[in-house]
Every structure is written in structure tokens, then in C-alpha cells.
Image 1 (cartoon, protein in one colour):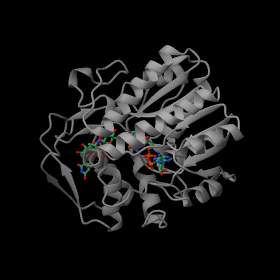
Image 2: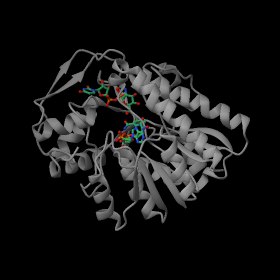
Image 3: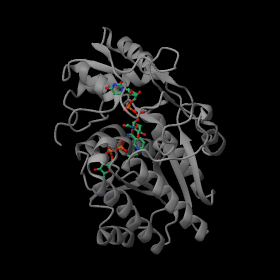
Length: 340
Ligand code: NAD
Ligand code: UD1
């Protein structure tokens, strides 16, 4: 298939490009490089022996999207582009609504004007809000709620896509709800490269391990979980990337708008992840216990059965693999891609 990948220079997008080449697809990336480095394309090329065409531009810039879709025929779009930091979205809600929602509206409009109706969209487990423990593991029909402007953008985009697909039977949209993507390509050539001090657990851990940060604070050890720390569904970014390729194989056959969880289905606690990481590191990771982080759910993990049923896909890599690969990436690239 010939695929347009928005946000393809970013963390999940770049890993998906490698998986897409392995599956024989061709692709063009549309990315404004607002949160990524073009160096990721060099790394894709080193791993795959092929380099995606990069169009540097904003999904919300109609002239860019229109001329791209005028110039080339695509079979499907994988839409990663967007801002993703929860805390930043609270400080800059307008920027999140503008970029994620207004940008996606332009993309959707140009897609339908060009007769391009196959879409794989990056949603998030954030649409489940702070889940009620009685709904765990989370099925796609669990109640939805937004707990931040970022979460609202994902929920509203899901609603917009559901309404558009209900009104026009041409659409085939897969709403992929990612749980907690972590890890890196096993080569150590590609990985997560957050700006500033990371908020998310795995990049914080790897930056403590490399000495860029002093110690990890584990937010809370008094949750009603097996060891008192929060439980999440971590998914190796290469499993996630392969999930997109599995979704692409089915998108044209699945009419309407279908939400699908991409997670492992297993809950791992913060303390367990730290123990796995220490195994990969070969020494203790400096850490201490601190107060709970406001707004955190005690536990959040997927029922991953729909992805298996619809796509024949499930995760293959476990927490030890995630930690080994995250550490391999960070230790080979102490400053990430350098060039941001
Ligand atoms: P990322 O920031 O690494 O990648 C997003 C890419 O989109 C970046 O390369 C950025 O430059 C680009 N971009 C942003 N706005 C753009 C615009 N208007 N036009 C063109 N390009 C634009 O993030 P990621 O972790 O790879 O996430 C990809 C998608 O998956 C996002 O939509 C995110 O919300 C979603 N998601 C991520 C996670 C996670 O934990 N990483 C979890 C759930 C969902
Ligand atoms: C975050 C996002 C969520 C997104 C998800 C997947 C927030 C509030 N939510 O969720 O929208 O869908 O990532 O990308 O950012 N932790 C520590 N110490 C740290 C950092 C984290 O103990 O320094 C703990 C947290 O309390 C949490 C777990 O690690 O229990 C995972 O945290 P994080 O990586 O931020 O992901 P989520 O909070 O699950």
C-alpha cells in the first residue's frame, strides 16, 4: 500500500515507518517537525535501507495537504500528528485544540475531497479518563471521559470521526487507543526523545540511568494495588508499530468507525517496571517514594481481545524487553537525536 503518515518523524511514527517498510509498504511523511528531528529519517533509512519522502508542513495548512493529495494517490492515512503532553495541554489549551482538532478537520476534509477514506487514527487510553476499577480490564465499550484538554482533543476527534462515518458510508476509520507506549527499536538507533524534563515514567527512568537526572520519584506507594504503586499497561513501541501494520491490512474491510485498544492486556506496577529496568541496567536505579501525583488512576490496563479478533495482532514483547531496548537507546544516544 502507499501510505501517508502524518507525524511520521515522531516517536511512534518513526517506528511505524520501519514496520511498514518491513511489510512492503511505501510511504510519505507529512510532519512539521514541531516535536521531532529529521535525524529520525536517517535512522529509518539505516534500519530499512529505504527513506520515506518527507514533506515538512502542518496538517492544518490546507494548501500543503491539498497539493500533497493532488500530487499522489494514497491507499490509506495513518494520522499521528498532534501535540501529546497532558500537562502542557492544561497550560496551553488553545494550542492543543487548534493543532489537534482544527488540524485534523483540515486533513479529514481534504481526504474526503480526494476520495481517500481509509484512516488509522492515533487515539489514546486517555479517552477512558480515570477508569472505575470495576471496568478493568478496559473494553472498548467502557465509559469515556476527558480529564485534560489533551484528552478532550482525542475524545472529540473520536466523536467527530464517529459522526462523519455515520453520515458517509465511504469512511473506514480505526480509532487505535494506545495504552502506555515505551521502549525503542532493538538496534538502539531510534527511540523516544522528549523535550525538557520528561513527565512520563520510562524516559524519566532512562534519564536517571544515564545521569541526566538525579533520581526517580515513584509517585505514591499507598494505592490499592499488589505493591501499592500504580499499575499501567506498557506496550513496546515496536509491538505498537506492528499493530498499525496489522490494522492497515484490515482497514479497507472494516466500514464505519471502529475503536480498538492497543495494549498488552497486562498490568505492570511502577515498582515492577523499576525492577525490570534494574535488571537491564545491571545496577540499582536511584529512586525514592514520594506523594501521589494528582489525577493518577490506581490502575489502567486494556482488554486487548478486539485487536486479536479483528487484526490477528497481539503484543510479543514483555516489560524486560521494553526496559532493555529503552536502555539500549538511551545509553547509545545520551542526548537523544541531538539536533532538535
Ligand atoms: P511525537 O510528538 O513524537 O510525534 C508526533 C509528531 O507529529 C511529531 O513528529 C510532530 O513534529 C508532529 N506534529 C505535531 N503537530 C503537527 C502538525 N500540526 N502538522 C504536522 N505534524 C505535526 O508523539 P508520539 O509519541 O509519536 O505520538 C504520536 C501520536 O500518538 C499522537 O497523536 C499522540 O497523541 C498519540 N499517543 C501517544 C502516546 C504516547 O505515550 N506516546 C499515547 C497515546 C497516544
Ligand atoms: C500518561 C498520560 C496519558 C497517556 C499515557 C500514555 C498523564 C497525566 N497521562 O499516562 O494521557 O495516555 O501517558 O502515554 O500524563 N510515574 C512515577 N514517577 C514519574 C513518572 C511517572 O512514579 O516520574 C508513575 C505515574 O504515577 C504512573 C506511571 O508512572 O503511575 C506511568 O506514568 P506516565 O508514564 O506519566 O503515564 P500515565 O500517567 O499512565
